[in-house]
Image: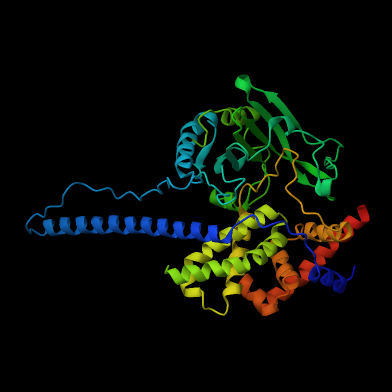
Length: 284
Length: 166
């Protein structure tokens, strides 16, 4: 295919577009509400700063020997945290804060041999997606004797994932309704995916992630492990644990040669299981 | 935002949503993610609408916001995991030949580096002049030309590799 033929194909690209799944008016309404919330938060910050400035000014006046000013009760100068919006059923900021606080509490026990552990906010990336809004993800970074590392912990509500009984199904339906071709590793094997029933009706899925190979259906190596706990209420706690180190993470830990691959995965299987089976990670 | 500004934003959103989603789809190759990106771009645009609405460059600015949303998405630590329940997202029916060709091109676009993909999509699929692509990408026209050329080379290489394997 020469360049002009490729350009012509791109220009004439015919897409079979599905029906629009979003309502532009609803998006505008959400945008307006978000703007109002942001302005309210900014107003609160300005008020706190103004009060703090008044207190400092009053103290300074006192030091110069002037009449003591009535400065009233002590005030908090803490940055106001985003308040959950009770009118928005998709607002998970309360659950995000609780999950982060819990993860910070338990991480030292689960990963005792690590240093400089940083637990990121639980972010709600798909807030405006009607199917995937109930999903919070946190990035945890640390360093150990194998160098910098990161893993991702996810808490998802019912409906975001499918069910555990199909989690390892090799006969997934692929593109255009054709059976999916399961990618193979150089030794001819497929990626591991084990389903392990747990007490109380939940199911643990342990699997491997692979790095893409030279062709669409090949993998060059196993690059990570993941764990998914399918709870009986339909919610899922997931953890992804790859040996790749991004440039950002490496630079944060002062590595001279950013990026690259660790000699082992950041978490062991037992550590992954300990985190995903922790019942405190919920969206409630 | 005043009432008339809100109304003009809604009118703009209604008129552009489908085109924005199409561009987003060509960038990311996933209709659901394309809708997310479109919504995020519109929400960001809403905040600056009072001062941007009368700008002649509002369409370019909107594309730029969309691109930024998508590039941010590329940097996300944990990209959307494919649903593991074996259920396909709804796929519209179409002519097999046409769909197959488009599918190959869209999938091949997904294999080339993000900024080259953005340059190719805006330049050829959206049929924008080089200057508008440069504005949307926030770079020089020379950079657009080089990114486009490299993107086409990479795209051709991907398609030829697949054809050789098939």
